[in-house]
Image 1 (cartoon, rainbow, N blue to C red):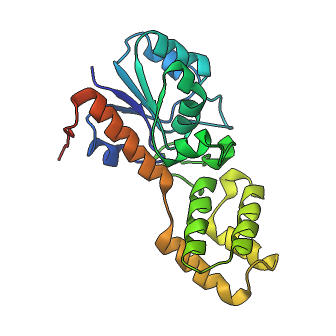
Image 2 (cartoon, rainbow, N blue to C red):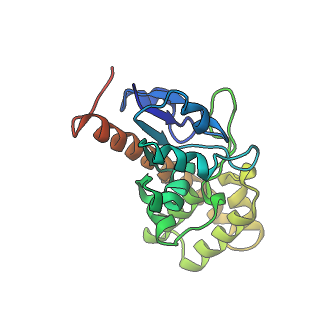
Amino acid sequence: MKPVVYTGTSISHRDAEKILDAEYRKPVRRDDIRKLMRSPPDIIGIIDGVFFDSAAVAHREIIEALKNGITVVGGASMGALRAFELEPYGMIGVGRIYDMYRKGVIESDDEVAVTFNEETMEPLSVPLVNVRLTLDLAMDMGIMSGEQVSGILDITRKIFYPDRNYRDIVMESVKRGIIGEGKKEELLDFFKEHEIDVKREDAILVLEKVNELCCGSEKVQKD
């Protein structure tokens, strides 16, 4: 049986299929894993899941799958959070976001939460973790100071996750005097051109890890 992978917002099903031959499902919700146990695959990949608007996948569902000998790999979003929490039970975590949770750099599920179109699964907001790493890049490139980065990150945290977008983040930063009016367009252009989409990067790592576990080191590519 093909692996089952829950994703759609961090990486589209179409793009994911180019990396791994799997059965792709929408972001995981409460009881999805339990229902899957009626005819379980050997491997489950968890990338995306619902957070606050619906009941999130329960820890006990994943633990039950692990106890039944199913390999569960997670990263990028809900998968990274659950992999960090359930590592002692044998869940496999991959990617930068998983490492950030494991090392205590980030703690809240708010870091990876986004709102998305239920039909297309297209994300409609920007995840805090992407903003965080993109701001770090801006500081490394000398575009902003550490003080400015800290201030903008604080503003982003205070914006409710479905409402996070780069324009509002920048406008609020100008309003609060963290950056000057003349810096606004430069920063907007920087976000547009240099955003670090770490959730997508980590989603690819999840798919590659599942592929490795299924098929060894050789990738399964589909035209």
